[in-house]
Length: 150
Image 1 (spheres, rainbow, N blue to C red):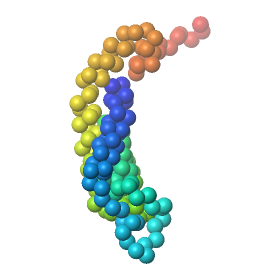
Image 2: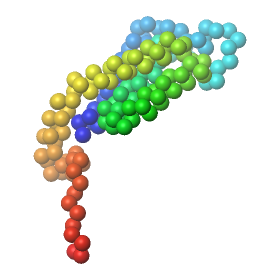
Image 3: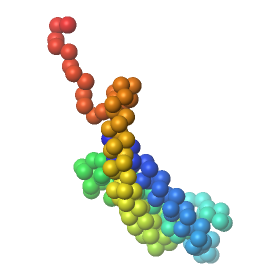
Image 4: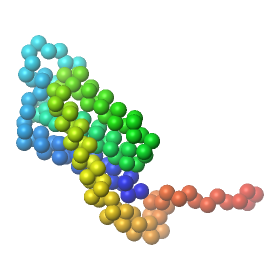
């Protein structure tokens, strides 16, 4: 339960860190610099910098969080993150190194957040489960099934 509650925190943290790095580096996008290049997607406005790719960061962080919650997604989630990253290059709004940096950024930040906050989050969930109003929402146990005939 703690990991499920932390997953969005890890993804948002990776995204915000990516935005911070972008605003410091201020690297240009290929659709701004390459003349006579047709892009599939609308080129973002000037000031929406290129490195690292937020989409790739978000996708990698989400993949890490999903795999932490459900090990069965260990092949599918990273493959989808790679596909998302490739799509940003394909549509002409990022260079390959932008998405590589974004993937690396998301894949590093998300697990760090999950590891750093797992114990405090587990303690918080445990404390909240002791409150009757929250116990039903914060439990993974199934309610008892009444006997047939009643």
